[in-house]
Amino acid sequence: MTGKYIKLHAEIVNGKCPTCHELTILVGLTPELFRCISCGADLEQHVNGKISYLPALTQTTPLSTIQKLFGYGEEV
Image 1 (cartoon, one colour):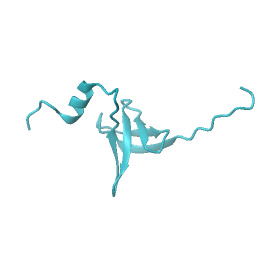
Image 2 (cartoon, one colour):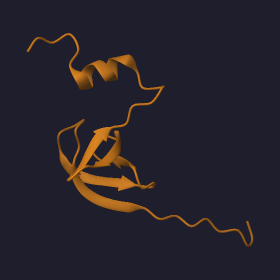
Image 3 (tube, rainbow, N blue to C red):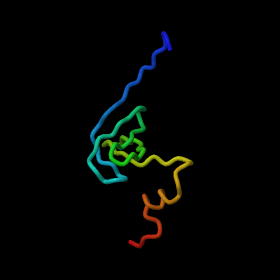
Image 4 (cartoon, rainbow, N blue to C red):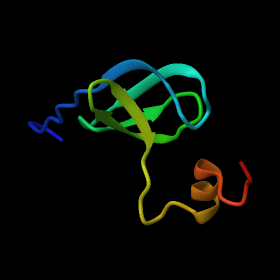
């Protein structure tokens, strides 16, 4: 690969992962998607008066993961 370069800019922030509930380092390669280095969960960054990180749900997210995140089947 002579003459071809890839410019990569990673953002590294501290935050609390909602999946593993740890204060950890979050690495972002896009402005809105981050990955927890403790558990590997993909997180979306939302800014609404404060910065919060929520699990990123896609079409390939297993149903068991969604049920675990939102507590389906548990009584309050």
